[in-house]
Figure 1 (cartoon, rainbow, N blue to C red):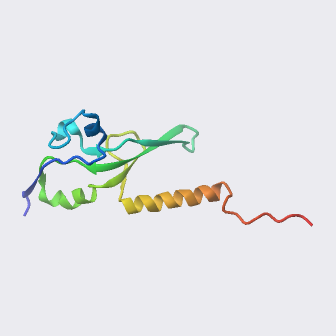
Figure 2 (figure 1 turned 180 degrees about the vertical axis):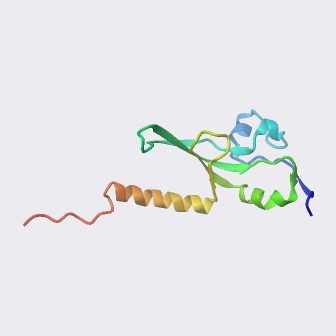
Length: 130
């Protein structure tokens, strides 16, 4: 079984920012030119690290781009990385964390909830002194 490969033709995701810009062909681009990922536009949020240094986290839609041969034992991982939400914490070309759409929705709900908790929106009404 080892040594088997699977052939893929590179289909860009409909949101692939580079393909939409015309920088690369929509389909069949060389991965060395295209890059490992179809990437949407990025949305960033500024924050700070515990040491006070400014940090920015970016989020975007990602799909692993393959055009050519891939080891057969890597297919399950590729299938997981086809349509994900990428979180970029360190400014690399690869997402630091890839979330399924469902996982991204769970994180979004948790972020809203904890933002409410942190800003005391989700608190009981204060008691008035008598």
